[in-house]
Amino acid sequence: MRSYGFLIPFLLAGCVTTPVVSDFNGSSVKLVESFGSAKPTEATVAEASRICGKVGKKAEAASARSLPNYDMEYLFLCL
Image: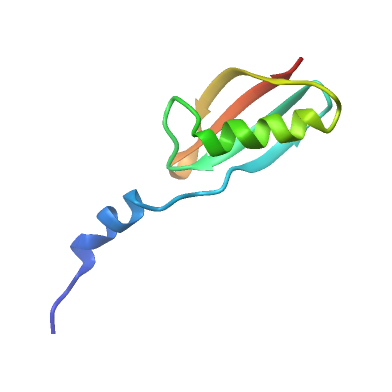
């Protein structure tokens, strides 16, 4: 029987993750992305724009921080 465990990192690298809103207060929104990098993906920026748009504002990226389990949290200001 063959073991294909060595393929798991390659399969995970191709996964597209959906950004998750972790906090929103009308003035800012935080989004968490699995396996993220220092720069948010287009999907994360689009989600921040959608959320800030609900209160008539535009999203502007402010910061990013690394979380456990290879997650990244992005802070967007709603201006």
